[in-house]
Length: 223
View 1 (cartoon, one colour):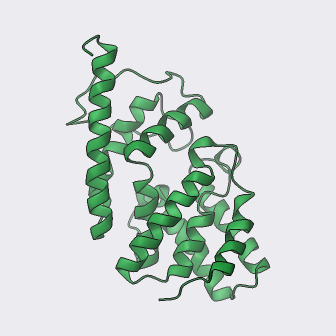
View 2: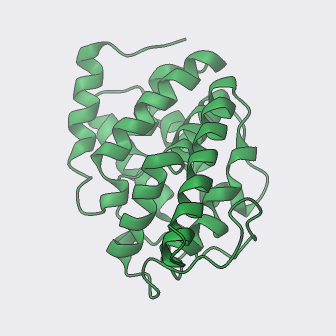
View 3: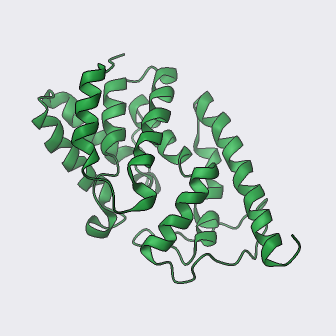
């Protein structure tokens, strides 16, 4: 399993950081969370850690407002190609990183049968985990505010223990932050196969369910 030296990772982070900042739900804190999780999962799966970590740093580099929600992973992969070539990475590694970014994206998974490699699995699970739990809640509301969800925070009129499968908007924000839990976030826990991913996903799922119960209780004056 290939790893990165501290110096190489510092150069990688420096090359990636300039692309993050405007979108509060996909900022540098999100990148660092995904890098940390992806590294752990990569080690469990025996994945090429250098490929996984590099892909994690660049996986959300392209702004959604410019690339479009459904195509931003390909735009992010192009930015990764450019920066990694500038850092002198071998072309074979550059292409593996770029392809991992594309194949691990949520949009790619929705489009049809996914290309499955240990590297893709590690990045995908890490990215999904940061959409769950306390950070997932914070990011859902930040995303709704930043992109202007028309119904704002939202009204919870369904059971968090048995959420409906609402249709997710792949080209913009969902109607509300609460809606996004039923269109995506509460349906993520079954997408994990690594031991680390399954354990953390279950914990984070329960946290979101309890949060939504409290949210509804406060709206209804029961708490």
